[in-house]
Length: 269
Image 1 (spheres, rainbow, N blue to C red):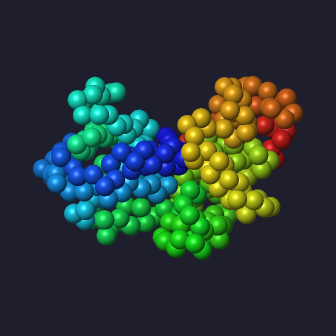
Image 2: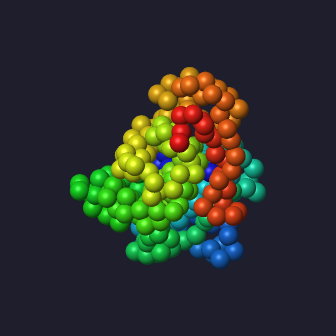
């Protein structure tokens, strides 16, 4: 599932291609929205909230989408060949200069712009949003609120807690693994036993912020292939710090939500 930085870049690219333009065609290939046609409306903006995307239109509606595991938004010129088969398209937004196609989207729905909180209101502070002190809003970055939410379930594993979008909006499996390693925490350590939780929250923001504008994600500071992560995707390989073989398994908030987890038995405790 794409991390918050990937979703933010998608929003930036969609906004760049569509904002301020008038729709000449509009399709949502879902039965409940198939008859809705927003042709003639202006695309006001495209924004991200954590891992959620919102295309906002002049008529007072927003297109809410979530990429889940297989989804992607792609933009082509009118008449240009699509990068994926047409049967995978869930929504098609057409303007005079661009065609934006949402492929295999996990969530696709239209909601009143004024009622967007009904679909994203459960999310915690957005790690890639401006600071609340400068730009107040329901999902602005507020580390105090993030800490309050994390501490509400002290028995939860730190791995599961940072993955929970109700606590920190934007952390995915890559960052959850990397955060635990860099802070020297076993993924199974309960939140209530983490000595410096503010440092975890601060690091999460710095990691996502560092990668927000680049397609090649790195948590090590090294952009070379094979050297971009500390532990994620490296089960069975030597730890970059101590050389110990990295262990792996699955861990989640509850049964059915397990994610792949990798850790160093020496560097993390």
